[in-house]
Image (cartoon, rainbow, N blue to C red; front, side, top):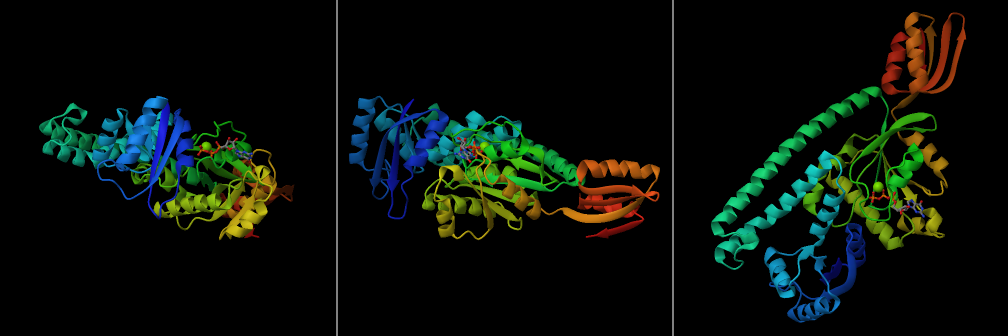
Length: 412
Ligand SMILES: Nc1nc2c(ncn2[C@@H]2O[C@H](COP(=O)(O)OP(=O)(O)OP(=O)(O)O)[C@@H](O)[C@H]2O)c(=O)[nH]1
Ligand SMILES: [Mg+2]
């Protein structure tokens, strides 16, 4: 489907149609025309009437079937534009919702999208109802004034139902998280801007083959695998990425996915270092801000500059950005510097203690020895004089268990 992109700029706003173009391609649209106008908002059409006329002619000439606006549109502006151009008009928010709706696979992701869509609808329903009552926008969705009220209430009721279902899923997830914590492995979470290479890195480290692509928002739901970092096992998880100006209602609906990071022992914030310095900086800050917004504040964070194979001057760019966090620079595709990454992750992820213990040769000892072999980074297990000498790095919970059984125990 051929689409035209429009953006109205204020003095303070930034041109963003290149990213909008990528988003359009992600949903399968073919952007064929871009219109940018610097002017104050026009109450009826958002853009000025002159530009609108220009756009109308272009739409006809190029057989454009849809308009995508970088700016948020009021219902009345959306209505007037669509009427003047005789094709549908959507905003960046709706476009992102379309991508998510197209890709959502898990029940939770589907419910979250439905919730975001309904909340978007609700935020606009009030104005639509008002317009319908005033007779200014007669019969939107084919509804009269009375039906408009009914419609508003119906949206509201459906939102409550979905929230209820999501609560149930979240409860189940909390229980699963608890169980996992009892397993004792630290949780390492991949995060970062969409398309930074999170899944490529996840696949590299875990030996998985989750879908990867240059389209935005390839990953929408979370995957976790046990991965070893220099002998230390951890749950590594990969999830949905960030984007600037993420519609607030999407932040809200995805709150549960993003807030999982609160429970992580370490965050790997993946950044595409092959882009321009300004781009890198904006995206890095966007991610840090969203993390802060969803309440992730006290989790250790490692910045992973990715795609160094595509940038010869990445060192200079990193230098200029002045990153406040510890960082490593890697290529998930070629594997360059991943060894260093693994070392730093093992060092930063916490949750492990190095211990030496002496375990008497009893029936119960064999059970714990097999657990140690499975879970710990074993440096030495030796038998002599009726007991086992153990030197290992163990998750804290297991270390506690070993301590309770040991004849002799100390943390190194
Ligand atoms: N050259 C190069 N390309 C990479 C590297 N890592 C990832 N890519 C490419 O970057 C694109 C995005 O990779 P993904 O792993 O899907 O990125 P993501 O962060 O998971 O993206 P979303 O799930 O869409 O948010 C793909 O085309 C990858 O092949 C790298 O180290 N070098
Ligand atoms: Mg991904």
